[in-house]
Length: 138
Image 1 (cartoon, rainbow, N blue to C red):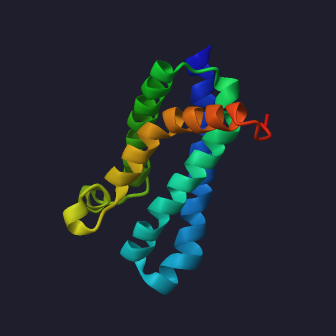
Image 2: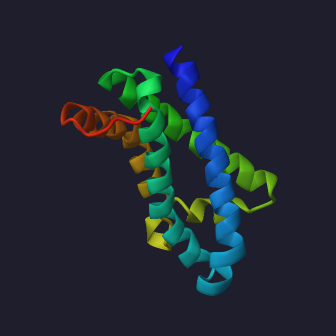
């Protein structure tokens, strides 16, 4: 059940990230250029992913070890989704690979690293907030 709930949250993250990507392509890329807009989008995506995970992490009922496993699962699913979507949209493999190559300006590996840590970090931050007496959100 833990992993089913985690997959549901990952699905929500992907839907929000697709919307984020569409908005980036429509409004940011024309002003900053494609590569720069993709680079700027990575830290924003990390914040979105963390925020969504932070909101729902208590409902996932993860142990720290499960949170790490979920983060790694999300990385695998996200990489497969990104590559699959890129190919479905007709992007050449060279262009898809650019996102993952820091030497060519791609920051996706940084984003995936952050995604891997997101469930664990959200669990820790959420736990600290609840222990400190800060108001807990559902």
